[in-house]
Image (cartoon, rainbow, N blue to C red):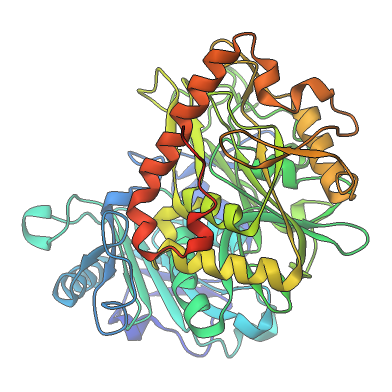
Length: 534
């Protein structure tokens, strides 16, 4: 067996039952991993020095093929259903054994990393993969230990990700050939049949979303976060396409992180050490920080070159609209290292409302904040995903339902508790349509959205005159620096006011219908945050 790299004293392979492999590469440098990836024919170099790979059949997560082991730890705590799908130890153990056998004559890449930038909650994590680019992704996305820390590194959690190993649904007790199973008792995640790297980070995220609220009263968040020059922390929640990554990458503020964070009593901390950004239609003008971060060490997924060049064509979605890049936080000039901020002063819920109903910015009460947090609303429009022709409403609880093992009200109550304890402003920001729905109205200008967020951060909306939205009851400011007052009230931007009222009632009913599945566990304050349909 070939072994190379900086190996820790506790190898961890024996713990999984892996006795011998063709080669074991421990904690290789990014340069070494890029070399291996090219030699393995996993990818090619773009002109910027970034490695470009294809993830194969799966270019995104497969939520229906992600499972939690149902055991004494999880049976009475996990919110079981279509999102958190149970499996048993027999299925897990059988698949793990088959994966271990599959690995015996393969080369493996082992990476020892930390998750959670706050030392009070840090977990030692080992990721074992069969491809160099998955190890590069792990290096980019998790928190990199110092060389001295690796000498005695003993993992608390282990991820075994073997993309080429496929399950047999007929005999293995899973739905399809790909799978991701989380076992909290064994402290293991196994992933097979898919080359999509995001399954690694989301599996780890799901573990933290279970552990942190129960053990530490920490709110785990699918959000981005940054901090101003005076130490004021801001949090940005939002589903894909709402501008979460773009709006948090502010050259005047330091980036804490772009995707996964915790909020404890001492402040906000990043789970990760990198960014995993969508690059569809990326341009230097709109997103210079992300553009400049795509250099050596960065990993591009499922993009294509301009023919005859090694220049990435970010408009090309022949493989998938979900083109991605991962890179270390250190690629962002204004990244905060270590990635820890104070308690937030402002929280922004971002939504791309394709129906043109929600105000471009509005202030929420604690009850409304918890209600909208549980709702996690946005909309998808044509071009964002295959098969979407008309706008579609999306509700994802806590702006990250696929990764939330506990009931959404648990996270919402934690949010409300922290909002009141630390006197936090919560804003609902519509980055979607104004003046009419998709196809009639226009998308909100990014410059206006940035101006509204800046005004909120700088306290310039504190003294504005507010009025309540007639249906959603959120508070709309009458003025905002840098933004025409005419667009602040969405009803006034519609030529046909009756049509607006009808669309507002339609959207409000959709909110309330979606919320019915949460009502049983929601308190009166949360229920009071609902829109009123007349």
